[in-house]
Every structure is written in structure tokens, then in C-alpha cells.
Image 1 (spheres, rainbow, N blue to C red):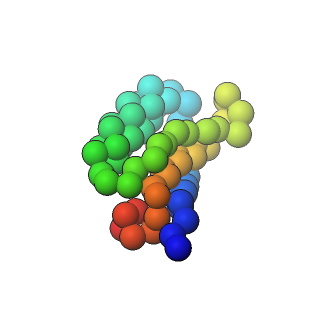
Image 2: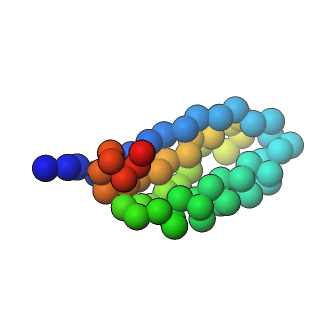
Length: 66
């Protein structure tokens, strides 16, 4: 039996480029949402002033992720 899978992508972004990062992530999420098995996505940062961003993609199984 397959289980849902989550992939995390980490990037470091200069604070002055945060708006570009958000636009890039939103575009990636829109694209991923068109694939079968897509369950959702989002992003997190350790702190509001952090340059580290984590993008999360979730699919219903590893096969659909690939």
C-alpha cells in the first residue's frame, strides 16, 4: 500500500528578493497542482527575517511524485 509523500526544497534568498521568491513558489505550486496525485503545497521560514525558505510539496504516493 502506498503512502502520501512530502518533498521539501530549501533555498536561501536575500531579504530584498522575498517578493520574487513568493512569486516563484506560487508559480511552482500552480504547476504542481496540475499533476495527478497532488495533495497540496506551501512554504515555511524559520523566522520572518530569515533568508532560508522551505517549499513543501505533497503527493498521494512516490510514483505520482516522480
